[in-house]
Amino acid sequence: MNMDIYDEYYELVTLLGKPALFSETRIDRTAVPKGAFVYDLRHGDDGKPTTIEPCVGANHAGTVIMTEPFDFGVGSDLYLNINNSLNFLGEDRTIGEFMEENTQTDNQSITMGGM
Image 1 (tube, rainbow, N blue to C red):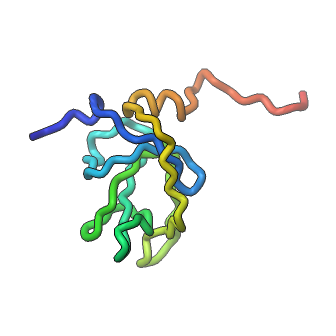
Image 2: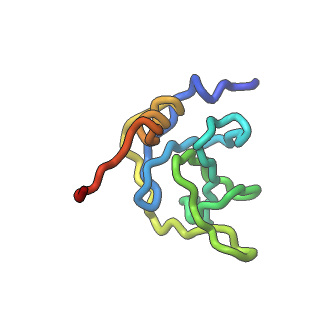
């Protein structure tokens, strides 16, 4: 069965202080809109998510969609410990709703004091 990711509702979460959508299933990275970043979560022996990674093969705990990229640094260890920072907010969003709420368009600008 091929699901349309744009019709699905995902759980709204924060991860490392940033808004994200969470899915227990894997999401096709080629299907997400421009400006979306997709990462996988790996679970530890206790079943709880412990790291965020570009792609997880084994011990997949879920997938998150974000509007900001993570800097994993340089080297072979391309992951970040999430240290219990995955917080479920009790709300659901479609990808379209999430992207609209969390991205700034070219027509929007932020003005900071001064002349």
